[in-house]
Image (cartoon, rainbow, N blue to C red):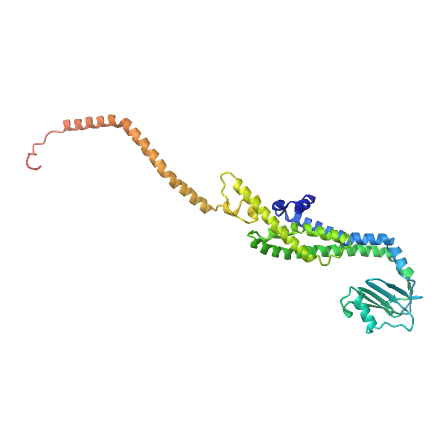
Length: 357
């Protein structure tokens, strides 16, 4: 895992081996990148926050005022008011105070602050992450609560808050994992178009793996920014550009390495193939001959070898004929002489201008 992490960061030529990793190992690596994002963007900041506050119970004791709910009415003696650069909290349970969401002051407050909590004796109105007024509003009515709820009741439930945070952490990590693979799919499509533009061809599975490993650098940068407290909401687009740049550079390095290997082989000709699959340890598609091509090449070699074999056979025959020519000729003459001697003369043949019977 850490070897792949180092190779993805610093050794572009090693991407030739990275894209050939098994599917399980690739998914485990993506889960590791999501874990890095989850730790720096959620777990560590939340843990440091609770540590500064002295724990969940101490945080509630210091920031929640004394209150009681009786007969569907909230009572907060003296009220409660907190205000910061991005939040506003005001709870006033006097009988004369009522929340008016249509008031200009309330509308302005909702638009300027990301977190707003307003309360009167009958209800609490909350808004989180400004994006309008009605769309982000949540209302809690105290008539739905049973009597006897107070601050002590809330403090007794702090143990369940820890489990709620753990469940929230699991949900956040699952969301990060799903988002990683979906974004990687989009980047893989863009990377496939980019690779064709630069003249490198590969299957989509290899491109998807290549994109996943190429996201290591951008994931690390975003994680460090989140750990330092910077807002990372707008880092997605620069991260995508960086990922595609690394994909293109890795593909070029793999192509150069593949060309160097092809030209360096003894007796091997440069095929000129620019597919990523050909740049791995597997032979290039042009180097893989089909069965018909091999049979045709074998027939051609046999045709070229046949004249040489015939010439060699004719030479051997001539040598043998030269050695046995004289004896064979003598035997032939002797046989012809014996045949002439054994044949009796014919009386019915008379000499004339031609032969007649």
